[in-house]
Image (cartoon, rainbow, N blue to C red; front, side, top):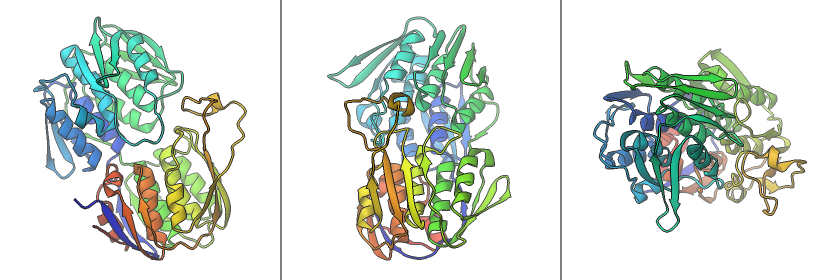
Length: 441
């Protein structure tokens, strides 16, 4: 099986990109569909590895799922027959952990293994397990088998407040709340647009979910049944990848369709670099190189801040900036797997110390004062990049490495293409349309 890219870089990338559907909405709407009665039709679902792995997983549980067009998926959970998630399939993808909701909804109890996915940090699930227990779910973990055993004794109810906001936790507890016979309130929630899209999807089919400032209120729902096909939002992470790549390569790209509200913080910071940023319409944008790229420091934070998923792509742009820039990662504690790999291309990047007064409050992960963290990098540019052999360790880092190779003179090999393709649909084809020289080997 081929799992590498052969890339000949050093060319300006120009053209147009049509964004695929958002990975983090596609996965959650597919899982949510298993709680519906009858068929569910989802549109704009990207054919990425995470989606394909999830489809294989829910089929192994007895559900049906089939693409009837390239990005239109029909799912039916009525035929679910197993409440035990297969260890091999479940370990491939972190979102398998959210199968707690549909399996508890259908069977009243379930067995779910520790989640898989990218290792960009510990991503502790203790907050989520605590939330399940608080809402009335009985949960036990077997360290020998690696499985959680969950059981509903009474219908979920009550309030739970996250110590720190959790994207996956908010979505899972919201789905658990759909089974309430009374009301469930989730406080200190994550406020990402992908969660708003999931709420829109569930409410359009009979759910009663209300979002108020920093909390979600879920009322009693009798049955979920889809009235019409649901189209998920576009992937804002994909936009950032192609926008930064185009400007760094001294090219230009037109990208659509995505609502400006989803990428406002990125657009503002991009303008500070001196790059050309043109809003053609509320859903179409033009990014282009205007000459010297100015260095801009960033700190990652949840929406509406600068997303953690954007920072590897930002590093690619800053490699070509004229001067010194700093990236401070606040969301995950292992998000810089790309640093040593980009050094192979000739980039000037190094880790630096971050002085933070209250790190337990400042960082969104479970900070342990006894651990040594590397949360900040300094980039000095512009660097003239050369070819290298690179290895992908996680999804967004993979996109940064492929983009770095596209900026570098000569022929590079990027190993681990399947990791990048967990979240990027038609990556090779889209890069080729922009004039990039890339092929799978």
